[in-house]
Length: 158
Image (cartoon, rainbow, N blue to C red; front, side, top):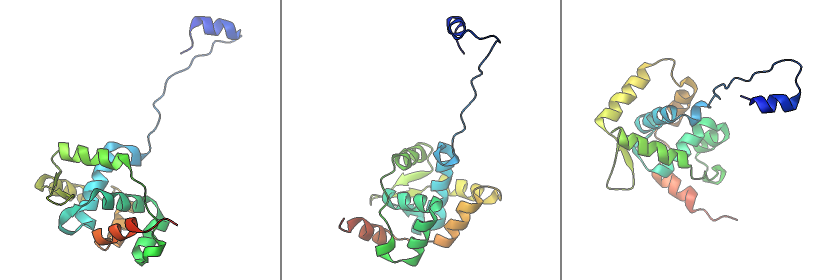
């Protein structure tokens, strides 16, 4: 809202008012959305419902990046670009830990808890939730392994 002094300085002939409106946040930036996607990735695309943080970053990126998805599905390591570290994925995992949806394993991985599996079942029962992302998860399946992630990340930068 403009102060009365500001209105005077503008020398407006007609009164003008401004109303604050909420700024829409893209779904992929909403913590609840990302939390649900991480739970579904662990349930649908991870052996034993467990994954490293690094692998989750690749999978999450592949859901929104068709070129990366196709490169992963081709299994041609040379075509799969490195994915940067995403701090929002780390924050989402911390949130999932706090809610008791995931737990750390002895390896540097995170595994769905019983509560996380129950949440995944609930999400999958919602037919109108994340349709495009779930279709991509179905295509990915469990084919993108931890070994593949390590191989991609070890490649030399030319």
